[in-house]
Image (cartoon, rainbow, N blue to C red; front, side, top):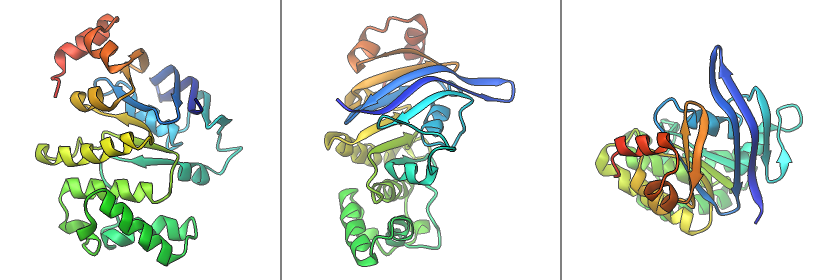
Length: 245
């Protein structure tokens, strides 16, 4: 199985704070990896390093077998292959939903506008908001905005999708619609790395769970292994204090 992401001995500090400590992780094609752990454990920083939004201090990051650094690669081109969805949707408020989705394919990938519009409409249909194509983001619920953000990422035809706590800014009743969209992507074989606090979702969708604590990967395994038979004391403690949603 093709390795889509390979991380070796990754370290990252912010000033005196050592946030990622010798991280090693392999993500294979069609893998769904859920990163869990308490706030401040380094999960989001790891994700941001994988999309080169944060600059690593040491270690290597390979995307589809190729070591990537800002010196050797055009990072914006790499990001076309590695889509990212954030907690806060980052939509352009002055553009309609459809305009938000076609912006990058037309401007960055130079896809003809007619084709981009057709693809965008299909993606909006896929995430269940085709009726909102001509609406501005200000008129959408949080769940709808997040689904537009997912459609916008998919419009670039990425090989890998990164999700940084995509439901944490949402009202509880809107979480389900975003998770359902992500579940569908998982079923279609999209390679995904997801930072999440939604343990029920992680248990249902992940191929592997990675538990992080204080900048280290403490334990990784299948959902069954991690949730039903964790080996490490810190994993057990974390799961005890985390409500299985």
